[in-house]
Length: 125
Image (cartoon, rainbow, N blue to C red; front, side):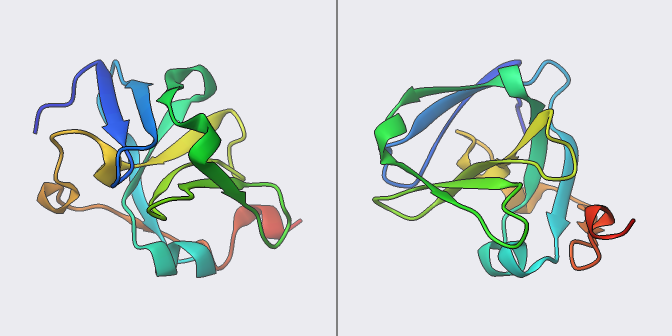
């Protein structure tokens, strides 16, 4: 799997295209078992806020928020593919859908941990 330092990504229909700055490759790979992630089933990695740039189709991005309305989940309004989200547990990062990376098959990744999103650390004082 060839993860480039500047990697391109897109939704399924190609309406939304973006670039990710990944100097250390895929970082913080994970799945999550919260109600949203269970349904979307994506493998997610993290990138700093300045590490993602929407290059085409920003107007096709739709926003979905739930529960505490802290995280911001973005998806293509044409094909429905989840592209990225502003993280609730680390608001200095975006999580992004590894399946959107050009030339990357997320099913080739091994030992992707599952995070306990049902018991999110921000839900406990």
